[in-house]
Image (cartoon, rainbow, N blue to C red; front, side, top):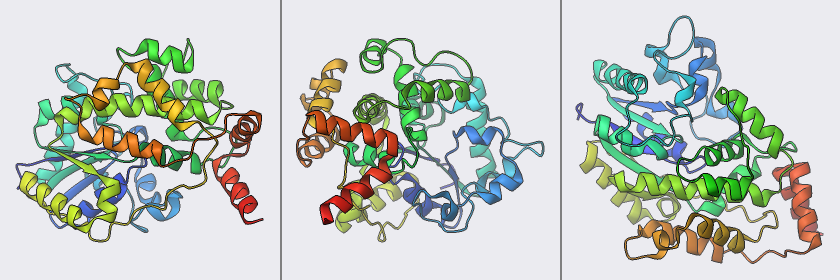
Length: 361
């Protein structure tokens, strides 16, 4: 078992924290949470102990146990996780399998070696690795699991966390990833416009994105998200040893047992997903013409055959077709556009509460 390493790849808001937590509670496992998060570059012991699922506001499991306690052995006394550089977070998200990145390689090796030195099996679960799954597999082998969620519900999970009149961190990251997506520059220009987000550190580029898109309609955020969702899954899926439909995992106990057994065969660890529950669907949504928005992204990227063609991965069609069919077409008239604008001004959570009150009235 100790010669194995498990990588869990996902997008944001895909139940990855739940999956990670099921490995964390297993004896003999060192499950690193978000090992490509930029905050690791400046984290101190106090920071490590302070941030917990209970106080995060992100609806995560885990209670009062710090998210990042597994990093304590690799924490530099001067601050930051040893060998980690904040550029690892998103700058090399789209790295090709054959590319060289010795600094990032040394960082990952350090995490794996630390776990093995403690007699534990390393598990690395992160929302920032879909674009680099092939690079990681080529360098470190191991067993690679890709989590996939209904893209509409995934994006609505971002939107539901809006409490101020600007995009959430998750939305900003998708704007940034789209603008820097290798080989898709024309798509980024068509969706976002030319000239984003500029150069500089990750923090500076995110700030540029925030300034530019803080008043943009929800439909633009969704299109940027979907473009990144498609491109990142197309990069990750060919390297997956196991693809997990997290929506099905929550509602189908037989499927959950199959996933547990497949992971056990692949890396020797058998998690328990019997308590997995589906998040409540986000029934209240901004008035986006979902099908039209999705079609425009797929057409702009030239991905029709990648989704419905004979060589397409079935999970993409399963997730895209039902997701958009399940939501009624939104009205595209002036009132709908005004509602979307209000959502951008008031925040997704505030708009959802208002819509719910109007429905009850």
